[in-house]
Length: 416
Image (cartoon, rainbow, N blue to C red):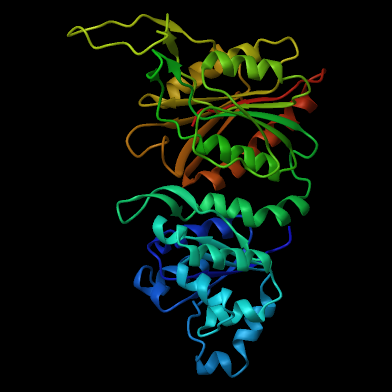
């Protein structure tokens, strides 16, 4: 995959605290990142931190004698495939709209032929100010791409439009053109993969529901990894606050019943099924159409089992290669091997969950079992773990195809 060279310009807003994570995620997608900071940005995030995550010395001074002896600002301007300014303050937007170049970052923007993208971040009243909006319009007319801002709570305690987009959303926006165009075949080349991800919500009444702590991050990471491995990916997702990976088809569901229907309605032609959703085990026997009022000191709730999506797929006559996932709080190996046998799975991925483990985190550690082997993966980022799991699943799938006398369709089930 072609390396995308990105200059990340950081100006002096509180949202600068998100930029180390933005650098990390850009690099994970294969970008080479050179950070350029304004002087005021250093009040919010240190060059040392950004150098550590980017692997490059941070540039900030237009009057750096060593760098400018070789016209360093011109060299950087020619090096970049993209200039991304995040956060972009009202001040930096004003400078560029006026064509000013008082510092290294604005000078680069005027000297480069690469696209310039801005992710604004400021107080909602500032964002709505006519002067800021006039500058935005000027920049957009000149071809500068504006990402956001998002609407929500702000550092000042107020709420409204002005929040910088989250790192994942920025990465998805700026990496999409190259990531999609340069994707190459991998270990799942030509396969159609369905992945379920996130929690389900089982209604109690019109405002309350039963659910779990799944963030969907493991399932979404698996979807991106399978796509990168060459697969055509269908992602069936419960309610999460995650960006759909580029090139992935997403189907949204809420309840286990809806998940069951979405899986079986779209399973035809699927070769690999990855059930990464944390499906609620029970739903209310009857959900109230309105809000249940608090009228007594106690109340009881009758629960009924939800459909077992993994088992239903595994029971199909032309069932896929099946990999399950066991999320447990204790006796991990025992429960995982029991599920492997009981559900007649080909593989199972097992992990401990609890405070700081598995759910609602960016890192995970798992043990994987199959009928004649096992492998452990230490604590690592879910994106890196997903890539390793996809490779292991693909390898076992191919071995199974060669060992069996008839063609099978693959399944993977995962609950993060």
